[in-house]
Length: 304
Image 1 (cartoon, rainbow, N blue to C red):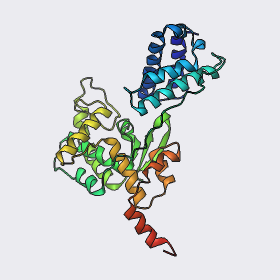
Image 2: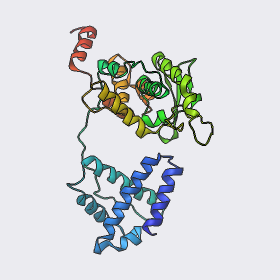
Image 3: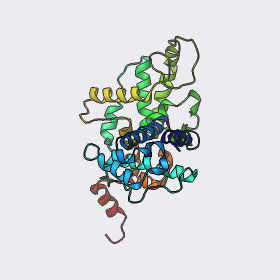
Image 4: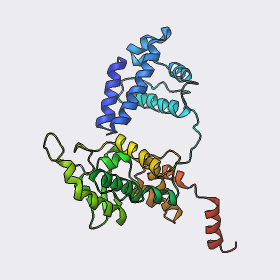
């Protein structure tokens, strides 16, 4: 089977059966096209581009070696995952007899602590500006909701008006892989959302096509807000508040998890709210300060 045909089959599988996000699918596509270009440039394995069954583990290892030192370990690890996923898929579909993955390993990635804000920094970021125009109220509602419920920025911009039940303080979220979950929403976030919704109609009326939209958060043109716009907005607000370090939507999500854990919430509950498939992903939030650990120890241990 030709590489391109196999690649199209794999991409279709990721989109329809795995139901992965567009960004994730595009990452796979880019990684595998880069692998294809590498093979095309190698005289000894040029036929491998035409027939995936002729690609060997040596070809894959040479490709990965070619990425050093211009690519970060995390980038190389992602490409390893892409190539492995591709060949495992081909083997399961019986398009090849054996996946050529012997000796193909990803580099070790140093564990990084999540970037998060202190409670004081979050309160400073969320301080009321006094502005009551639709966009300012929208920005405040977005910031409050991300911190209140720990949502991903992609989840926030995908929300529709009916996804938040204010009466029971819950938001219905469509997370990664199309998995739905229900997450609590705090009263301060709901107050900000109500204030925004009172002015949301002004943005709806700015749509040039005149078509109504169910999207909760809208841009200045009355269409659904994008993740990129939220990232830019948070950066601007952080600068206005004098917060020196880089802050993005994920930092607010990390802060949500870190502060809950620090206040005594259990990892399983945080895992459920964050929408993590594996508890090991949530465990990165266990970076509580030594001082706090000592307070808990002194308070709780019977023979301290």
